[in-house]
Structures are given as structure tokens and as C-alpha cells.
Length: 493
Image 1 (cartoon, rainbow, N blue to C red):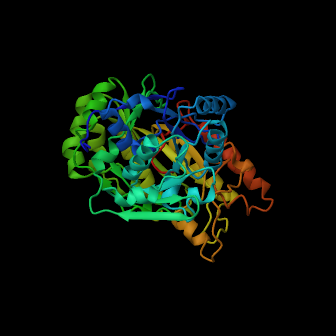
Image 2 (image 1 turned 90 degrees about the vertical axis):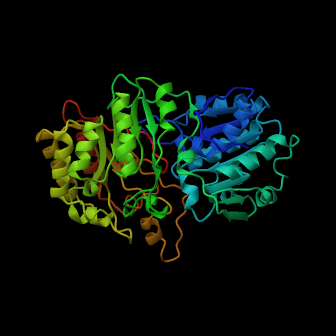
Image 3 (image 1 turned 30 degrees about the vertical axis):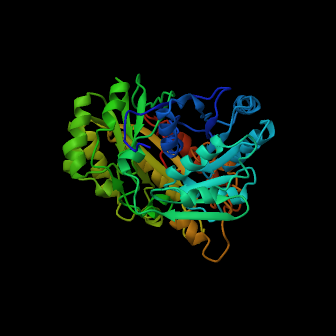
């Protein structure tokens, strides 16, 4: 089948005739953004493209509810009961793992015949206990660059007789298939299979995913829809203890950007937001991508790490139409920043480079992280450090910086991170399938979900809890133009 990269295909919302259902498991917290299900669509890309080439694109449908509402589960039950479903692919994060299990359970209960249910998502690459081995509702789970494998198993299920999905020899199918990339598959019953093919999936092809008819509205680009895009995978810094990007082997960047042209042509007037962990400053980006963005005549934004941002690249971004930059400050405390792996981010560096950005007319989105812990799980955050962070950001706003949004969140332990490995060093493996709830931080992004050890060890420090909640509300309302930042979701949670 063809591997060529072409105009992105659009997957329709699921209907009673959908045979392959792509579901983005809803986040159980109070999300401040709404975005395209990028990871799910990337993983399903080869399958969608091959079915479209056969004139069967209408067999694929998606659901991306955003929240676990009764209406969503009623719709899911109705779709399953209609009897057309043969395959359900569920993309989930650690925080949404319980909703993923519920989705699979509803499909199993309502469908009149066997359905192949496959799980995966950002956590699956790094978790020690694969999803399919832990959750009996799932037939398979896939990790790594497993787009080829997903296509193979889904096509097998589509071609099998009704009721045969759980009897198919998926390991045998994959062992005979010409797969690319590196990945693994787990099946209920502790059966695993891994591959490491010589041929790698190109970054350009991975980033050229299907789309869905779901407009994204991002408050920093008022009056426009926003296209979430990427031109790289991984992170060029990779030292943050709370982030799994450091485990993915650095940053892989495409040197060709022609795949963006049909996307821009199909969405005239939309703003662009690059979700790359750090927007790359390669020669190809400078000589090809930035001129393309400038010629498009539309506003766009990206994410940077301040210590690696140069004055000259800041000027280039502004000259080529960038109007918004998002960056992680996390804390004004040097001790806390060092604890989370941001040793080079001093207050002077932050102030200097934020000023560069603002002086060139670009708006700023600032991430703040409360509740920092050390590798032993000891709480480092204090009331004093919270106050220090609040005052530092107040000073940035009052100094005239173009602060467009502030994103307060709580440190969350994710699988595959340096922090997760350190906390499990004594052999007490972390159970990411039973996520502690954090009611004290529920007003902050990531507050009510995520494996957060801080709240387990606060031991009655009500004053700190109250201060963090107060800081969150205060920071989100700073300045007449400041709102809670709404960042389209990235490829990894």
C-alpha cells in the first residue's frame, strides 16, 4: 500500500454505521482547553489512509467528548448497540485510565457481538504493566511507534467473521507483517510481542495525521479557530523530572514542511499553534518554515525553553508572524526549579528573555507548577515559596510584560519520568491504574487528577493547601487581559 504523504483526511463523527471507532478517553478534571485528539489520529493514520484509498473512509468515525458526561456514555452505548462496530481504539492518558476502562466496558456490554478493543496513549510507552494486561476489558494495547501494528490488527478484525476478534492470532499476524519503527503489543493473558524494524517511520509522515471536524478555539487568538500542529517529536532539553519527553531519545525534527501547505490551504484564516515541547530552531526551520509562516499572513504561537532561547531567534520569530509564546516558569524559587530539572532557569534569565519576547510584541503564556517534591517524595513547596512565586508573577505583569495567560498546575507524577523512577527505586512500583484524587487542588489544572504524591504527604498542612488554591485563583485573574492559559493538548500527557 502507498506510504506517500498527501492531503490530510478528515474523519467524521461516529454514527450507527461506523465500523472502526476512534475514542479519546475524556479527562476527568476541569479542562481549560479543547483540542484535536492528536495522538489518537496519529496512531490511526496508516489505517485511515489505507481505508480511504479503498473508498472506505466512511467506515471510520470518532468520539472526543472532552468530559465524561452521561450524554457521552449514552451515545457510546447507542453506537455499540447498533451492531456495526468491529473495532474500537481508545486513546488514554494516565489521568483518564479509569474512563478508558469504562468506555471498553460499555462497548462490551452493549454490543451484540465481539468487538476488538485496543488501547494505547502517552502512558503506554512508559508504563511497566501494559494496559491490556491490567484491564480485562481490552483485547490489546500498543506502545511505541505502533501505527503499522495498529493497522494490521484492525484490518484483521474487520476481515474476520463476527465474534472472532478475541480468537485471532494477533501476535502471529504481527510477526509476519512488514512493520516499521519500534513498538510493542500486549494482549490480555500476559502475552507480549515487540519489534524494532530497520525502517523508521519518517517524522513528516507521523506528523501528517488525519483530522476531525472539531474546531479548536484558543483564547490568545480571539475570533479565529486554531490549528494545533507539530514539526518535531520529543524534546531537545529533556531534563525536567516531571516530563516523559526526556525518555524518548531527544528531539526528531522534520526538514520538510510541504505537508503543512494543504493544511493551511484547507483552513484559511485559522491561527496556528505549534505543540512541540520546544519549537526547533534548526536551519530548515529558519530557512523554510518561518518564511512559509510569514507568507501565510496569519498569527501563530509556539513553546520555548527560556535558557535555550537566543535574542536573534526571538527576533526571527517576531519578524515571521509569531504572536504568542508559551513557556514553563514553574516557580520563582531556585531550589524548586532545580528540583524539577530546570537548573539553568534563573530569575534573571527568565526576566531578561521574557522581556525580549514582550518587547517584540509577542504575548506570553506562563506555566506555574505548585507542590514540588524531591525524588524521595518529600514536599519542598512551602507557603513562603508559593508567596514568592505569586509576587514574582505579579511583578512581571506590573512591569508591563504582555502576559496573555497564566497556567497554574500541580506537580503530577507520570510514568516514564525521572521522578516516577526515583519514587519507585525501592521496589515499590507505582500503581498508575489507581489514581489518587486530589480534592484540595481541584481548582487548578491537573489538580483533581494525576498521581500526585504531594497531597498524600501534606499531613494536615491546610494553610499550604489554602494558599495554593488562593494563588491559583489570584494568578488566573491578574491583569485585565490575563486569563487562565488554554494550551492545546500535546502528544504526551
